Image 1 (tube, one colour):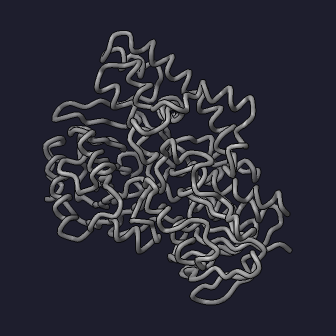
Image 2 (cartoon, rainbow, N blue to C red):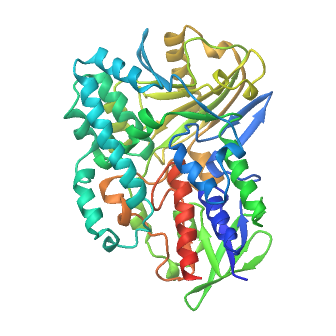
Image 3 (cartoon, one colour):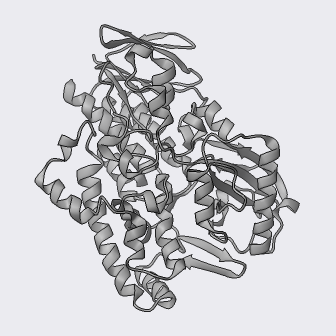
Length: 488
């Protein structure tokens, strides 16, 4: 029987394990932490249940497609709730917009801001839908070995309409003038880890995912997805090894001979590193087996890291929806502090998630579950004093917006930042989202999914094809597994 060892039980690693096991491969997954999920782990304290990372459920078709390949459905495992409004955006005190779920209401909202914008939005989303359909069919499922994968008339013809060589920002600003509309349409690409000015216009497909496909929530929290995927994997015979970090990938004559963990040595026919690509290559492999140098990695444009706060409050807060974006400060200045001149921002934008607005199971009755995220540059100095300063900064702005000073109502508080990403996930420079999806780091220009020196070693996850985010990670794991199956 063919055996595969997978390093890391994040979304991509679990997805790969399911696909391989479904084809009769014996699969072992090795996870350094005590539970699966990677950045999507959860923890509980004082009656509050916290998703540690991803909190947006977009592109429901990608999740459904994953479960369908095993004759299952997402609804077999968790209940999906469509959020309405999808999210709230604060532009200042008493100045906010709720983004409705219905398309006609969205059109009315745009028209109220800028005359004629509803018709332009219709055109924009029609093109975004085309990009979504073609991008999700033609581009994200390509392994990205070389440019020759894209030398296909259908793809070349699509590339021009996909507007691959312009930016999202340029496309949006050619149609709309109102600053609030521009911010609303530029916001989704921030999930891809780069500024709208540096993100290919192809990724306006994210606007289709946002406004047309909608924002959803799995009742019980995002960890329900992890539970569901592990259930599929175990049903297929996958064995998970928790609290067992891999310490070395040993090779012989151009092949991985075994992996070494803190508890033993394991032989196998294939190895998939779903762990941090940089760590897997630079720390687990000998120098002779690496495809990339440390210099190469230092030149990569990384997506941001994050300062996160998990807060439990003794009361509910009016003025917040499930998802809340605070655009009350200048994004250009904050972006400069992330990408151009990396430093701790003076006036950061931030995001607040209150899942207890939708789901009363994640907090005690009458209490509020609050998750706060501040995007920051990767690799910054991180200490408790800095974290406290930014908690107070965010709390003051929330007080101004909602009238509630959360500092007076804290039952539980935990922070998470650069040093935690490095410790828990070996995250390169403490990044939270992986590799930025810039034009020069798209498709075949990303680090490769297969090691060209070690023929049975593959990589998956947010530092390789197709990129950062939960749906891309799901696809990445399936893609790598399919590449191995082709060779069996």
